[in-house]
Length: 129
Image (cartoon, rainbow, N blue to C red; front, side):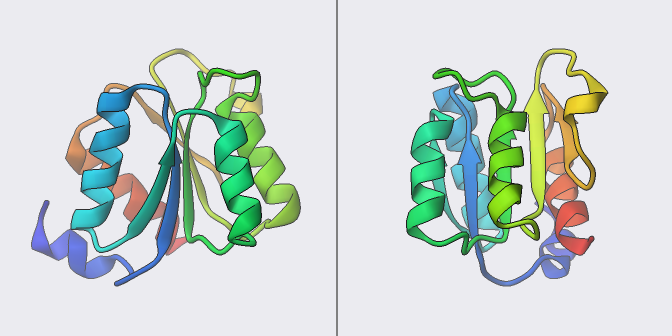
């Protein structure tokens, strides 16, 4: 991580990340901690949605993988969250082709595989909007 990029990001905040792959989920946790964010990570959207309700939408960013187990896809989770808390920025990730119509602006799409630098730059871009 570059010091210059870390200086551009907000100093604190809570991020919710939903990713079914445990390695990528751990990558999110570590990267977010290095950038100064607290995070809650989940392997399915239903658990993440429950958490979001408990914290009353108090988070600065949602990162969601499109291909989640349990019937709620990442884009659907983002849509549900934004219906209640429309100002939460979001990043949708996937290693597969995602129909552009499901990526509703201002959500940013980050294609897998991505580098740590790409993840950091995307987080910075979303939070600067």
